[in-house]
Length: 252
Image (tube, one colour):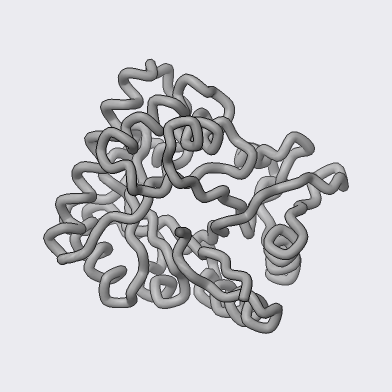
């Protein structure tokens, strides 16, 4: 049976500020990308999120970001490869501490927000991330946008990689995600999102905003837990995958 990983960004609350429906979404995914404190996630939130993932048998990954709490890690910053290496290593190490305390192991690393998008197109930054992951633990899986420089850098570094596609984001003709600043960046129609996922998983294509079919490699599908109706969408997506004969399992 064909299998696909479903991942979701988790633990993105901070202090009294609450973000997402982690408790509702966690049982429906196979991989959790846990915020490591630079864009969201305080120590208590990280600990609780890792415990929730362990409770539901979900693979835990680190979700490192640029140091931008106020901007939720979505604003690009001028950073050097050395700075990126250090900030990724720092955050992955923090997550590892909480994971080990729960008696489990870290499975993957997925950069967040602006860092993810920068590494998708800038090979020097992508290589810095891949180097940090390899130096920390070469058995970790590196998640990156399908067809991106991050996937290339991960393979160059000898890491296992998981090419990521998105359920609720639109795509440009070059395979990049439509910037969030544009009105058409997000897909709000459930049937359209599910149809996009099935095309990407079964046929390896996604329709861009101009109607072109763009090739993608789909190892893991990102869903978002902070949108209205996120739990209902996750349930419907899992049902659609099951009906199509596609199992849900963590990325290898």
